Length: 97
Image 1 (cartoon, one colour):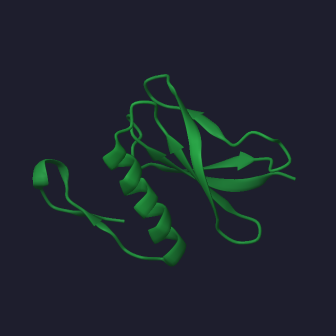
Image 2 (tube, one colour; image 1 turned 90 degrees about the vertical axis):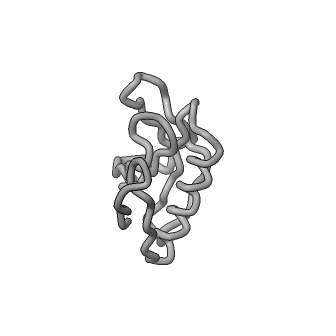
């Protein structure tokens, strides 16, 4: 039976995007998504978010270690309902997530 999963993308044009999509847990492969530049973002981690929900970390092939670690922190924050503030572009005003 299909379920809605949340996919957090690290790196690439959609860095930081939280996307919801259908996924069949009976299917042996984790979800993937094509990014805006045409490359495939593959699952690097999965965190259970309840009895019928999963969250996946999808990684762009050119994601930096810093981007991956930031999105891993975001997965943890989503699991604990924590608010995180990231500095804006060029050190400008922060964005709250």
